[in-house]
Amino acid sequence: MESENEEGSPLSGILCLKTRQDMKRIEETEDCFILDFDPFDSFDVKRLSFSGADSERDKDLAIIHETGQVACRDYPHPRHLCLNFPFGSTPNPTHCPLCYCYVCDKPAPCEEWAVSSSHCNAYDSTLWKLMRTN
Image 1 (cartoon, rainbow, N blue to C red):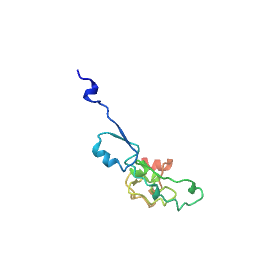
Image 2 (tube, helix red, strand yellow):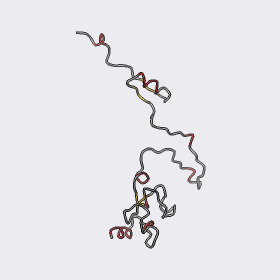
Image 3 (cartoon, rainbow, N blue to C red):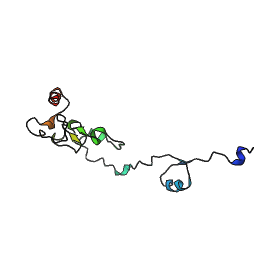
Image 4 (cartoon, rainbow, N blue to C red):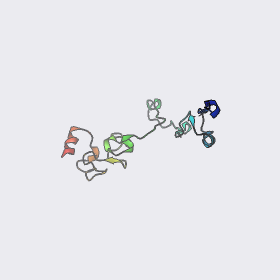
């Protein structure tokens, strides 16, 4: 019976890549390696712009990175939950392509969007819930 050493060890060296530069070359020669970085992260800090803060308080807070999908931005949502056009700080009749009417459950703008009952102003309240159920 041959020993394990004569056949060769089942273990091999494992490479750990620290930067993206060597990845293509190592991919061509190695079956397995560990990445010490996220290869899908293309975030570039140098592209950030912190100008245009409206108030002193806004200068203290900056969102510098975001991953994944956000329900109230990337999926259909009622107008009052829209992140592209925040309810109350932008005109309520404005809407993104994924907004829908809270009352009608139809894509915005509905037939009543900016007329008498102004469905564009609807939000999660007792009055609008009653109109929604009717």
